[in-house]
Length: 205
Ligand SMILES: [Zn+2]
Image 1 (cartoon, rainbow, N blue to C red):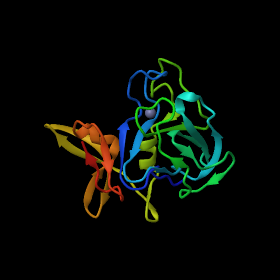
Image 2 (image 1 turned 60 degrees about the horizontal axis):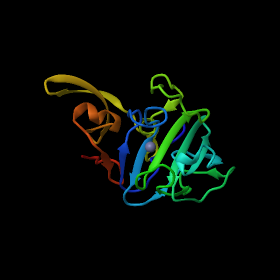
Image 3 (image 1 turned 30 degrees about the vertical axis):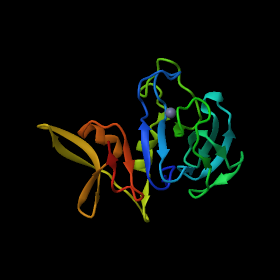
Image 4 (image 1 turned 45 degrees about the vertical axis):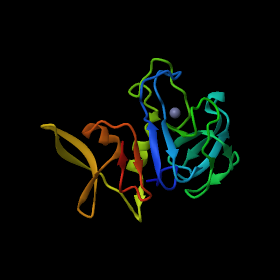
């Protein structure tokens, strides 16, 4: 199983989630918008090879498309600058460039997409259910992140929310349960979620 990581070091926030409906060409947000608060350097979410640079249209601004060994393709958009070349092999520690606001972007952020096997923009009127090659990168990273040497294993946790039972995925660390990011909105209204450096203390707004 390939190891994944978040694209920022230090604190970051997810400001627009995958699947949100809106005025995008597809009618929904096909990636995750992430802001690196401590460090604007962007790292690959998985080791791989740079497939193309600025190959998918001006709306993405300066952008990188990357192929990973497990067949997944990731895209990093709106960069201020890019520090890799087409064909270059990258590790988890290779800086790709700096977060920016090039292309269609209000303010500096990373727009991160994850596709199965090839990059493909979905048709208008599609949805996350019909565009099955598009993956929520944040959820995918959560399922493929390593803590030290071992993969983190998330288990079902049933909790009571306003007298209703809700099942969420959670990771148990030293006896405490940490709910996966994707399931936090099941528990409370959420605008944005940030993490501290070791990802154990989500800050929820
Ligand atoms: Zn976006």
